[in-house]
Length: 90
Image (cartoon, rainbow, N blue to C red; front, top):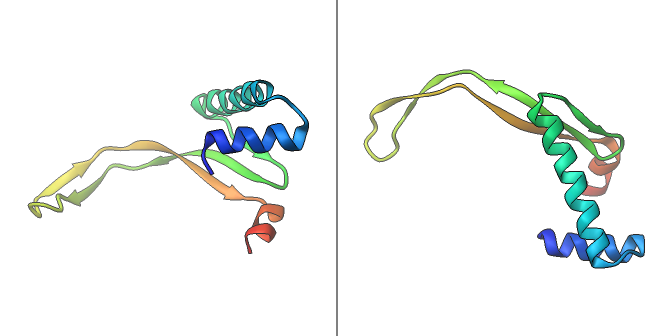
């Protein structure tokens, strides 16, 4: 499912216009992005939790040459599915 399909599904399920559904989705994604950007956790009960984790610097290999390279530390977004979502996927 891409963003357009998600907007259509939201519009149908919530009885909104596509413009309203897109605005609502954009606002929700913006709020989640801002929270994660500040390092906050976003927990949506029943759906799942988005959290920012730090990955330490490490050594790796260039797959083309086999040469050792240093991979810098970075922050990544992790998602853990909630119980209800896990049941649906199962």
